[in-house]
Length: 114
Length: 114
Image: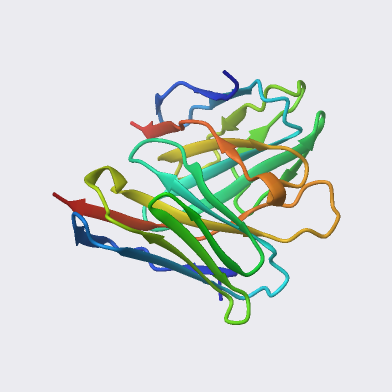
């Protein structure tokens, strides 16, 4: 079955450490997205990519970085510059014209700073 | 003012009740309207999709769009404890671009009590 796989499900980060969250999709979708979800704040867009080797900052990109070397993969790195990284991170993908088809989401990664 | 406003709840109802979830929006160019359901610690899943004004029914769920009032609703009939989740509205315009990002509400937490 096609879908989006996020790993790991839970991740613990020490202060000052960079960590990378994995997102892989086999839906042949061109566009991919990273969201951060905090209680009471809904989904906030971190980065998105419409095609391979291209990506754009979302609303809260500071302290995060991404790459899009393959159509199937869109990893997110949470750097030490991100001051409050504890959150639930969601990856999504869509066909072009997401408004027509909607997003498919992964099951999320919960990141905790220890 | 946010583009999409949604009451975060929580909304608690007894089993069998009719539930009404709502969102208002400010951009009159939005054409596509969706509802996502998100269970705790999971990714959102597309529940209902509507285009322009009118009603769409799927089993116990009815999505309603009133473009003149910039108001969308999701009704759940005969609510069940398994409907307990966060419900997010999402919407998009279609301006011919390659990808049109979805704009999400903050989500309403629903609890259906047995």
